[in-house]
Length: 245
Ligand SMILES: Nc1ncnc2c1ncn2[C@@H]1O[C@H](COP(=O)(O)OP(=O)(O)O)[C@@H](O)[C@H]1O
Ligand SMILES: O=c1ccn([C@@H]2O[C@H](COP(=O)(O)OP(=O)(O)O)[C@@H](O)[C@H]2O)c(=O)[nH]1
Image 1: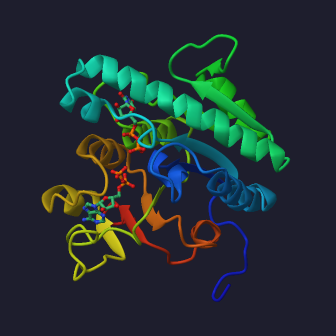
Image 2: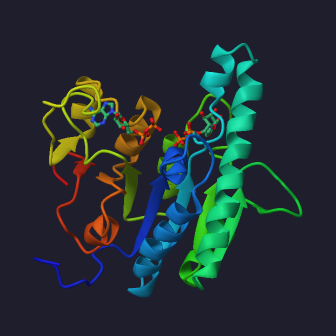
């Protein structure tokens, strides 16, 4: 990889994968091939000694806002969305463990007998011992998103960086899916994202990382090798951070 020596720049990361990324080319649900590819890429990080926390979305299965638009009570829809993230987490654990990567799933909603309840100190012990920890069920509260959950858990476990894996190459001046002429930023401040209303992450999540000066890198997970490149300090995607970071 040009310009990198493959030594990790970050000791502990929090990686957010969108639920939709797990669909691959399917319309709904989970494509096992995508899970296996992601497990491989995450395994490369574990292999060079990086501690990995994961938050997975649920948009491939249910989103509270969409269910609410179809007539369901919003809180019920959000509960379904959070349960969807637990299903995705179980599928990801399965793929990681088939790749011989020790993985723990914790849930913000107690689900005895299925997954462990989220406990920050226990999560830190698992991370320190090299296990991948998947934080599922979002924040456990309706009206939030898994982007906010990723930023929250990243701050709680003192990650060096939150990585938002998405289907575009970074943050642009407009939505690049709707505007092919959109221009990509290499670096932005939290206030730039808020002031310009750049829609790549919800505002609650951005405010949270700004208040705690947690850097976030937005990058394209469909690009093979991009995740490893970020972690070894490569200039991938867009870095969102404080003005003097
Ligand atoms: N300014 C922007 N820069 C980059 N992506 C943007 C921007 N505004 C909106 N988006 C959209 O945000 C999406 C990334 O967010 P993500 O959370 O991965 O997807 P979703 O919200 O569909 O689950 C991109 O697919 C892109 O279409
Ligand atoms: O803290 C949270 C996180 C998620 N959700 C619900 O779970 C759904 C799936 O999460 P998200 O939309 O963030 O998934 P992604 O877009 O990343 O696939 C959301 O739409 C919400 O309905 C929630 O209520 N609280």
